[in-house]
Every structure is written in C-alpha cells, then in structure tokens.
Length: 129
Image 1 (tube, rainbow, N blue to C red):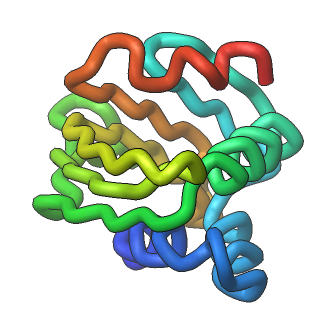
Image 2 (cartoon, rainbow, N blue to C red):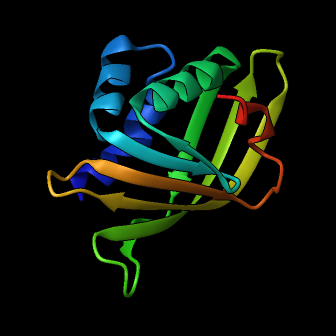
C-alpha cells in the first residue's frame, strides 16, 4: 500500500516540483477512473488535465489523512478520511474534509480514485475536463 501512502505526499509537493509531479502521475494506471463529487472521468489524459487545472489555481496545499484501511467486500479497495488546507492563486485560503476511496490494479497502481468531499460542490469547476 505504499502507493497510497505516497499519493498524498507527492500530491502536496507536485505543484512546484516536476519530479514529484512525475512521481505522483506514475502512481496511477493509464486506465485511471476518478470521481469528483460523483462526476466520473476516465483515462490518464483526464487525470493530468485535472491536476494541471488544480495546480494552476493553487499556491499551496497540505493534506492530512487518517490512514488507508481496506473496504470490506471490495477487493483491493481502500479508503481514508482526509483534511486539506490550501491557498488559492487568488490568495484566498480554504479547508476541506472528506473521504477518498481507491482501488489498486494487479500492478499495484491506482486504477480508481473517488474523492468524496463533505462540501457537495467542492469540485464543480472541474466538471468540464
């Protein structure tokens, strides 16, 4: 499960560090399916577009999480509660909390990632990726 532990670590560093961004992207399968507030996206190009949009709108970000735990009756699937604070490119600061659910493929890469924020419209601006 090191790949899941690395996910938040590299996500926080990837904004300003190209090697960390490459490492973050390498944690994911080319067939990644990700879900933001119930809105499904498919494939590595969509994932990279999301990351680019997110990082362009951010100055700083820091995640905290409780630790990935297996989801009962869902093989190779794990979830964790998380909290994030950040500073947008506009200078506005924010906090969010929620749950992430991830599934790993046979190679140990993240093939599915669902972000379930406690704030219902937290990712609305990314619907057109």
